[in-house]
Length: 243
Image (cartoon, rainbow, N blue to C red; front, side, top):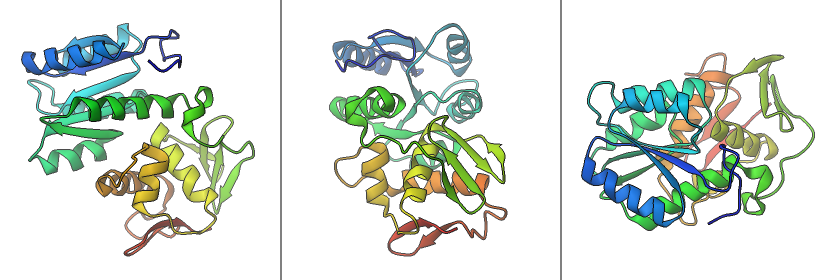
C-alpha cells in the first residue's frame, strides 16, 4: 500500500462505492480491501450524500444507473462541493454514459465488466494526483511562481485560478491540465501527452477524458466558449493555450 496520507489524515485511504447491485458491490469491496483500502458502501445516491457528510472519503466510485437520484446528478452534486476524485463505473456499451459522466465532472471511468488490476491502477493514479505534494510519484514539482496566460493567472502554491483577477472554481484535474497547458507556453499538447502527465496512463487512453475536460475548462476561462480564443484546438494534434 502506498505510504501516502489520505484525506482522512491516516495511512488507510477510504473508497466510497455507490452501486445498487449487491453482487458488484461485494466484488468491489473484496478487491479494494485486498489492496488495503477502507470501503464504504451505498446502494443509492441519497445514502451516498449522507455518507459524504459524515465521512472523509478519498475516492468515490459511482455507478451511473442508480435508483432514485441518478449517478450523473450525484457526480454533479459532489463536484459542486468537493474536489474528491470521482471514477464512474458504467456498462461497456454505454458510450453516452461515459461522455455524460465526464462532462458532469468525473475524473475518470472504468467499464463493466471491469478488470480489477485496471481499476486499482486508476484509483492509485487519482490518489497520487490528489496528494501530489506528498508523493514522489506525482511527477515534477509544481512551479512556485504564478503562471500567467492572457487574463488567466494560475497560482500553484495556493491552487488558485483567476480570470481578470477574479477567482475561478476549478476541479483538481482541471487545475493540473491548465498547469500543463500554460507551462507549455503555446506549444501543442496532444491528448496522449495529457493522459500520461495528468491521468497517469502508461498507454494511450480514451481521448474523450481529455476532450470533455477541455470543454469544461473553456466554459470557465473563455468569454465565448463556443469560439475559444485562449484554449484552442489544433486539429489532428491536440490543444494549446494562447495569450
